[in-house]
Image 1 (tube, rainbow, N blue to C red):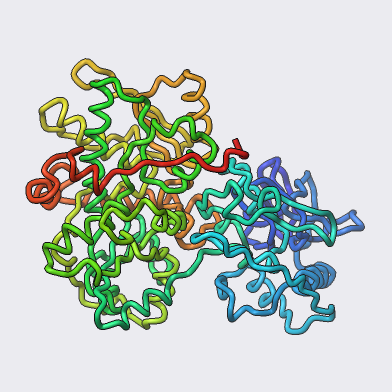
Image 2 (image 1 turned 135 degrees about the horizontal axis):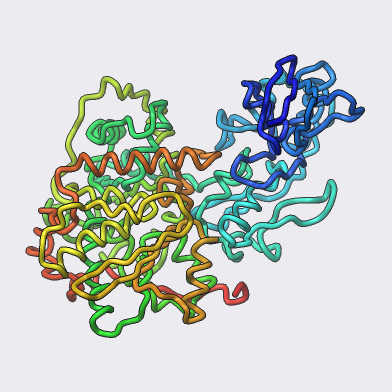
Length: 574
């Protein structure tokens, strides 16, 4: 331990701490902009400067380690003036359009400017006037708002190993740009949206589809139907000022109907359906010499990554569509028929924790119903904005049930939102199908946790099935390189593009640190434990859809509506 004095407070802090960490330990908050708790120290914004006794120059708190007897002052007039001047300089190159910005009231720069009473700026406003990049259906870039913190670059290059973003130029000419100076759509960007979480301002954000929804709701001829992904409810609670997971599902349904949705269903239904299709596909590959290991195919960011960097391994992907797209194709065929609604009148909306889902819904092959299967995708953040606009008080809203058909789900579907959840859900079903006995303890805890790569072996009647789980694409890359080299011992690999899985998706409430993702993981397993049915193959509505419509897993109708194929792209990035 090191003895220091911070603003007159004597304290012992761990050796190796920075001033920023030491100050936090004694209850003093030092402002920062480029600092991110889950990233390397950059020390390039200098907003965190403080005085250190014996030093003539101010020191960056995020990078300066403490030493024995160090005396630190974090809020002297000199420090306050320096921070304010730094903020004024940053703002002198930043568009002054906070009211029009996607990060209004959730912007680190805006908050700091308010805290330091930046009411006017002595420096001339000189915005570059750079064009927005609106090339993708998932993300936009507004380079004029970039503060060069480089947090997005680290998220893209270190966490995801995609290298879609980099720094170009030096000094006042420096800017963050997509690879090779291309638009995002032509770069290796996989549209996972982790750069959105990393960005402190509105330089990167999701493409909003709220206006399209409101137009559909206003059309009396249009039936607006929505599906809710398993990780959405937990994080939506945070968006509307509640604790993680505190919003009851039936109250969430009531809120959506108040907004104007005609029917509210659940992606969890098709998550259960995915397990039946994907589990049987795995068993078929194991018994008939199919391509192994088989990769899960639920995460569209991961699919984009595989198509971009590992096109030679596309045959390893499960042919199953994601639960979102299975739902989209069924809502305009099976569900439409059940409800007596013309498919052309259905406006299919999915509420997702993921921005890559917007790209997935727009893929040309996602039209198995004869229409665009999913018309628009709204992120958790977009639904939060709609709820705030509606003025609903969720503590007083009477709960309402899901609409009939495609709303029933099990605990296995719930855990799809967590890294390892798809694997655990599959094992619950595959075990009972192969062993022909009841699985008493459905908790495959080997699949849980926040470790980057998890592995396990399951004995199925003498056949030892080796499985692996990865979340975050830097970890996925290690498994993929093993497979490419012919050195992989696994039969089944689950990969989620985002850290934590869907709970940490690019469309979730802005998450600056991984501890929030871990909170959501815990909440998912609590919800699973409370479910009366926890195995996908016991879902009564799933049984019914096979009886009435699909007939059997991997059958003709299933292949027509629930399965797809993927294509190599961007070969120059291999």
